[in-house]
Length: 122
Figure 1: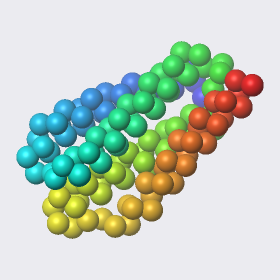
Figure 2: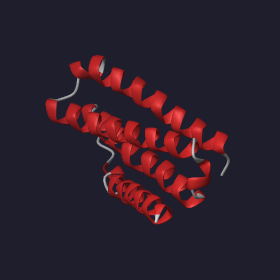
Figure 3: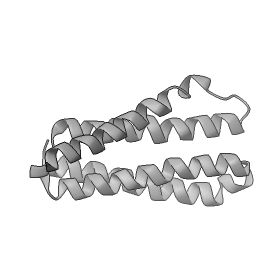
Figure 4: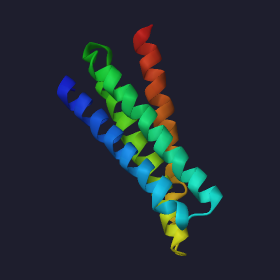
């Protein structure tokens, strides 16, 4: 895993988190329920947290394994993006239920990513 790829991935996810957060706070606020908006914000928050982690690890590329990178990257996609899909499809009245089981898989990958950071640190 190259340092540039890790930093670029973190930057892209960070940028998208800001865009999605603004979209949720402004455009979606009018069409989502309070509960849906809260869930959308959880997806954005976790995406941003892990984007920052990727940036920190990228600037210390010797401290990251490719498994850690992929756990965080795929974890963000499966966790946060499945939440976005669930919420937006539900708001349109056509909830994509197949995304429901994908969210915890993404969460598990994020947890494994953190575990790999810990193992590497020890």
